[in-house]
Length: 436
Image (cartoon, rainbow, N blue to C red; front, side):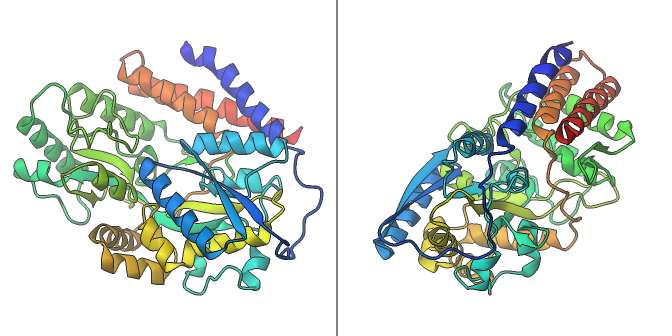
């Protein structure tokens, strides 16, 4: 089976990356904030994102440099979170990491656990970073053992984004609030009837698997990340079966483009719905002439599987020689009104309540994000623990199993069992390797 051929290679790569990060931490750690450097300073800032994000970030950097003539910021835009992790790991091994790193909840603590991220508590205490307009519960999501390693800069959640005009032309009223899975399926069928051309499917990509599991009181991983977070394989089997059913009936695209560019399946009109991060409504709106809006996932269990999370963090490298200046730029990124007018909540709802309110009053798209997030927050279940270090490999196995289910090589039940077998073997091997 293809899984068996791929598993050893993936596991080896994953453990190699973990070993590569181990033992390359700075020799000394301090809880005291460093003083500002004498003379001109160059900071390196690495982030991922779309062309729109790159342009906005570079303009915000230009603004900062105009206000701080002794600071030069070298922008390092990369493609995605995988590219950030890879480049950061390589640069840490060489002790040449970027000073400021845009990080994701899924991997930031893998780096902080190896002392590769500078705690920011001292900078907050000395007010180099102003947190007065930020909810402490939001800041807590970037903490571990009371140390603030990762500063949340914005929030989002996984949702459906849809083409408003396409629904209107089909005479479909988008549901407000919660609605059952059966209603969503009726909407998909109505859209398919209204758009029967072969290249069209109403749904670009499947509703998020984590949402599906959480709606039924299950989770992809256990709290400590050592095993899968559910014992009843029928839940995942049902999800696999729904994937195949919708694919076979032409309700789900065979192969969707979910990158935030002109080839995105919503932008090209190949689909009406896409499962996406809520902040991407801004990028999609800039790429298409048709209005787009946010919608909840359909209810599939007794719980609300939605969650609210930091869409991304900013972290300061432990290797940075200019941590004070890095912290001051971080404060600018979060709290400066003019900078956030440029950034315009493209990364998600700003954590500063003052900035979020200001932008919502100026932009209908930001207002849509803010109101939607507050609505979701009322019923959302708590955020899951960060993904375990084995996630990259386990998720690759998941994708391989799903492909085999969709192609008919495995039944949904066989796929769920096959996934458990290989996933838990990998997770157990990773746990053992971390102890050696």
